[in-house]
Length: 88
Image 1 (cartoon, rainbow, N blue to C red):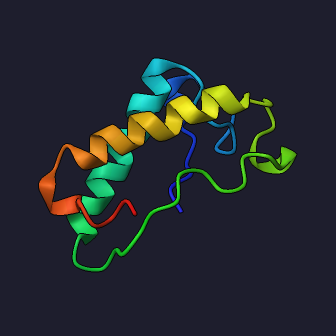
Image 2: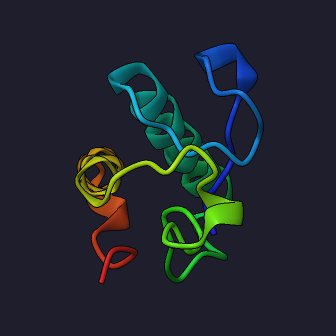
Image 3: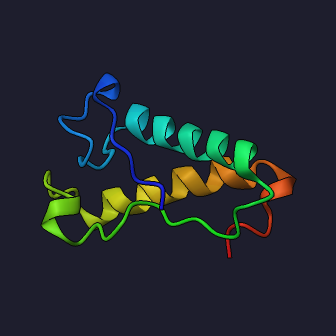
């Protein structure tokens, strides 16, 4: 599960879902680097755990913003052919 907020990117807490281009790109980079380090041990990824539950999305980021987050992470992961089977 790749869900990690980062105050350095303007999120209030670790549980705030990325909602700006900079924040989404930061999470996509985090996921990508995690895959590079652990590529032989990762079978699948989940982008943000249960975004419809308030405790995982206290800022109430909209479904369309969540879709942007998934798309950003997807594009970053799929930019490396080694990870073609990770995103199923």
